[in-house]
Amino acid sequence: MSRWLQLPLYLGLILAQVVYVFHFWVELVHLIEAAFGDTVALNKLVTSIGYKTDVPLTSLNETVIMLVVLALIDVVMISNLLIMVIVGGYETFVSRMRLEGHPDQPEWLNHVNASVLKVKLGTAIIGISSIHLLKTFINAGNYTEKVLLWQTVIHVAFLLSALAIAMADRLMHNPAGPHKGA
Image 1: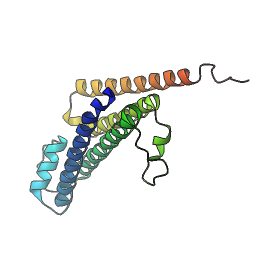
Image 2: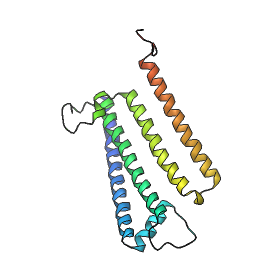
Image 3: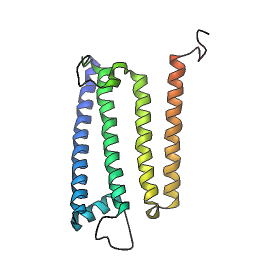
Image 4: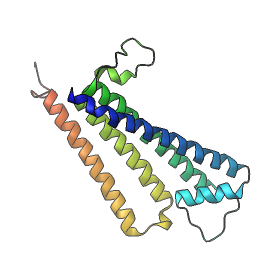
């Protein structure tokens, strides 16, 4: 019964999901308002993405649009990560959701277990890290070389960690190697 102690944790993650949805809509509304010439919304966007320029911005430019869209994609990817943790973790560690045959059942939920969940989470973290790194490189003029280097090193560490998890998972589920049964 102690597994039910995790339920409040998953409910808390659902509330975090609500915050991410709200944040997404606020940023999207600011982007739309800025596209129609609202300078207050433009300034809020520029501040939120950390974009700095020597020339005051009076309208959206391609770089600002790209950074805002990448920030929105980042929110979506983190939201997807939350769904994987909430649904996959609840299903794996707390209780079955009994969604078999239901039209809303996620495809990946059929074969989720702790091992599959780790690999999926690792892949999602790499995707999120990639978006952050891309945002940093697009806006590289506003970062020091040290920040650029460390973000790249951290991203490579995520890549190597995910590869190690996937290889360990493969070895645990296929100990005889690729020539099994040959």
